[in-house]
Amino acid sequence: FIIIILTGVYLTLFFHPSMNEVEYHGPYAPMQGQLMSEAFSSTLKISFEVRGGLLIRQIHHWAALIFLAGMFVHMMRVFFTGAFRKPREINWLFGFL
Image (cartoon, rainbow, N blue to C red; front, top):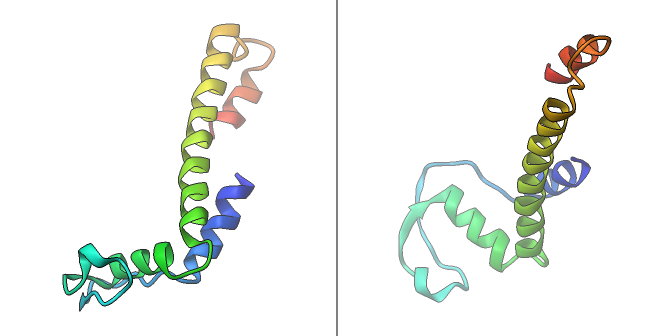
């Protein structure tokens, strides 16, 4: 969870969430001259122009997937071991929230 927060804050510093149409003029040749949103253009800029940007994006992506998988595994463990039954139903309610 900490990795997701740290990489997300770093990516936020470079991301521009705008739907304005812009023409791409970056280093990624297949997209040269294409019209796209400023948000997608900033994503390409993070990936190809910011030092380590693509690595940070991939770490953020995989950390989010692993976090969701961990939540699912935890829920299955609680269900199959019966950890939601008495005397731990209060713990289960707090964990559910």
